[in-house]
Image (tube, rainbow, N blue to C red; front, side, top):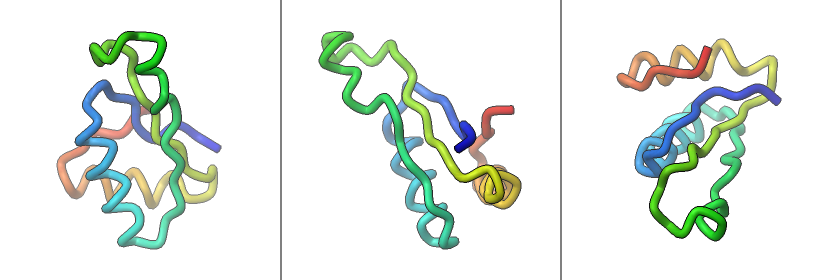
Length: 71
């Protein structure tokens, strides 16, 4: 698995997940339950992971839709 995206904005994670699902790319959001530790203030980033072999295609999909993937 490789990190595709890291952000504190949950709406970007949701949008990116929908885009990738539409392209048939499996993705897995991580750190979504960290709000228990942070007190729901949104300071800890969440990550979106994809398979290593799908990273290049997933990064293109995000860039084409105005989202900058992690490098």
